[in-house]
Length: 379
Ligand code: COS
Image 1 (cartoon, rainbow, N blue to C red):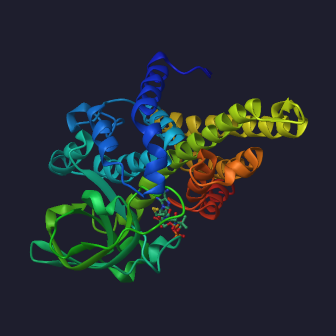
Image 2 (cartoon, helix red, strand yellow; image 1 turned 45 degrees about the horizontal axis):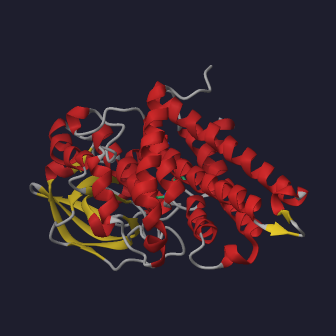
């Protein structure tokens, strides 16, 4: 057992921190306030080879492991949760299913430009009536000659307005329930595919989230990902890996809340002393530091399971559940430590508090995480 990060992992953390100091931190506040998609930063992420970290070089990736990718998401999210999530959604939700289930031809055609950062990816599963109950999807795909014809709509689809390719889930056989769902590769400019307006969110405000409409959207038969009826399994396996990514995002947010709280409590003087000398503050900092470290261990352990080829569905759910609830609770504590100033727009802890909440919701709510964990434990 070894709790020390390898030199390679330490190096990637240092590189991302330097990158963040230079490009991400100075822009994070404006990205949030203006709800601006950080296109300039995403271009730089591509130049760094960070848009396909855990995938082989043959497919345009960096050929690194999942833990490296997780460290990148953590560090980016520590500086700007929008940026961390944009990379996470692209890598975990669009690149992974192509890598795992795509044919050689599909990988060369779609995974390669995604990993190289020439295009961004998106994942469209959720529908107005099918959120947690993902199997209740009503979007349909009907085979017509050499093409599938897609009809329906999706909601809350991250990266959709900037996506060069979307992985879209649709029913090919309604009578089969979850086994009637299939996954499709849909290029962003396909006729019949339209993207709704950007949804104005409480947090991760620069991440673009929109509805997706499919009206007689025709794609070649070859754009079926995996087999017909395999879509639900593809979605679940994709989300298993994605949940480690969201745990890393939550970890980065919680770490930032701790950093800000430590710094501020040492500077802020009340009753003639820095507030860090008061036990009320010390205990909050102690709890925060402990929870952040526990989140890190769960998250890195889940990534390690992935890298070792071990099962990681339960581990990913545990990491996401704990890290996201930690992020929400501890960013609240950080605002409390800052008092009035922490409640003012433009203060980092105010942004962190809003950014944290989504980590308990997307890629599976805390309730779904508990379903997955208990399902594994009680099996
Ligand atoms: N990996 C592989 N296969 C999986 C799986 C996983 N992690 N989870 C479920 N499956 C398979 C099951 O094995 C089952 O197949 P068999 O019938 O052959 O055994 C099939 O999928 C259906 O599974 P289940 O009966 O558990 O499905 P439910 O409809 O009850 O749904 C939950 C289970 C709620 C856990 C699932 O719908 C879910 O994760 N919902 C949340 C969706 C989500 O995260 N949305 C966010 C979208 S991105 S922001």
